[in-house]
Length: 181
Ligand SMILES: [Mg+2]
Image (cartoon, rainbow, N blue to C red):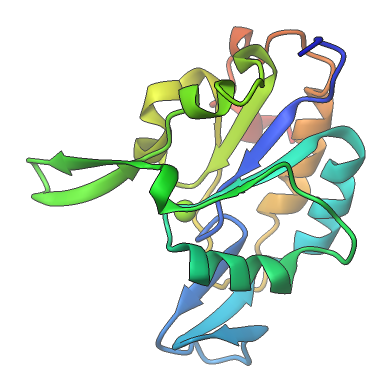
């Protein structure tokens, strides 16, 4: 894939773009999926539109495909297309002996196999553990739990757009982005 193609931006879903909970949080939900009350993160629609102008977009979640597909249908602006929507099936399951639980990893090697370049790929997630194999491609944001005053996505879109022409996204430090945006 030539380097002048737009960077591929892979977005996590839960606690990154939305918050879904079986217990309502005291204000009206944006929509429901199965037993879940779903709250979209403030600026989500603006975020999609801003990023869509400059990036190829994809969503990769460690949730099930049936839940994921229904949420995406509710949040994606009409007519907008994604490169892919991947569920937990594409994740790698690992056991954490310290916390004695299983967790899911997103390994960008799988995306590379589809023909995308690792130098031109960013993954946004609220859980560093999930992208630990590719921290050089990762951008972290605060987990979203339904706060109405949250501004992470507005800040993040400004930051992402500042990276859009980087030949190699892995060459720069990204952990400190919130100091500047
Ligand atoms: Mg998440």
